[in-house]
Image (cartoon, rainbow, N blue to C red; front, side, top):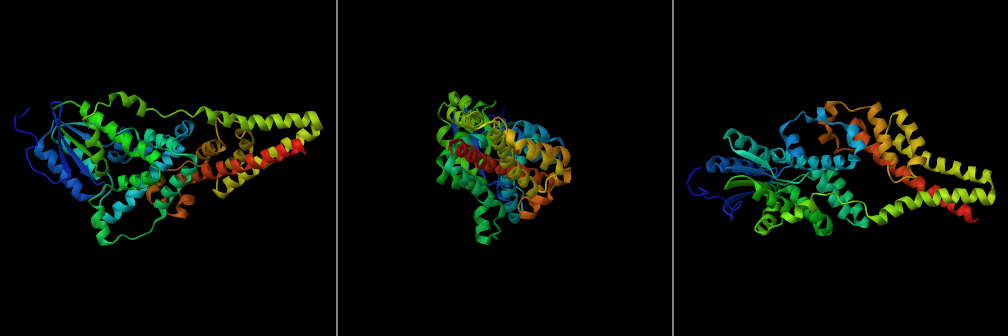
Length: 398
């Protein structure tokens, strides 16, 4: 290890020096779609030759950036089994948002993070991925958001997809100096502080602890500009005891479990009581109504998504059953059948970033059509549950 003081050079305000417990950390705040940030990252690593380079990525995001053909290995059936389809969709929306801005700025999102890894490897410097698994971040943010604000969160994400505003030269110059994804997260956080805690604050703590853990005394850490202030604020604190908690996906609350099981319990009990009070024929009629009330709107949802005929049939057959259990929804069943009958090909995975920004692209691209099937059949099943449940419940007391 060299005895030269670290850092060896003077940099802009985008680089902050932190000395802590025998380590010197150069914290570089970047904009994820900025060529200037990419050049700065390369310059600092080349000049300083640190012991370790920390990068604001988790393993899955790093693979997505460094290996363009990772789509070949994505098992959609397993994604659906693990109930991660919604998480995958949000990931694609955020990636598309950055890619759209990157196209106007002339650089693809995350280039500076990938550059950090490439330059480190070229100089035989260790690298460490210091960000939390993006799936945990998104699910903790969703869990923390109050029910009445979840719609706003979804609307913000969807609006970012279809925004056609052309950026002025002044705005482009401003964006080149910002971490645009953190800017989006901060805007959401201003309205929904519960989501901001998971999207920004917890990650500041997580990355600060991971940076302190890495080997060596001379560290370069490359993070989004939106995390600079937060990391600087918490890095001197000992928050190791918080890591286990913020790496967990919170379980569904007991109240939601009770509500989830109470609805099917009320429906089944009502049909049984109708049978006792009014006879088997009346019970059968109400059961038939339940099947039609759930099956028809769910099947219509599949038809609106241009689903395979087998998926439409699965929608009609599964909705009356899945509506009576909170364990699995009709959307997951139909999405699985759609994957089996019309699996997307690699070129559609590769085109998803552009197709996702147009209405027609959601129907043209087979991957996005799976999301449509998931959303529309789930919505149809929800309508059927309330319509069918209301009719049965009122029949019980009529």
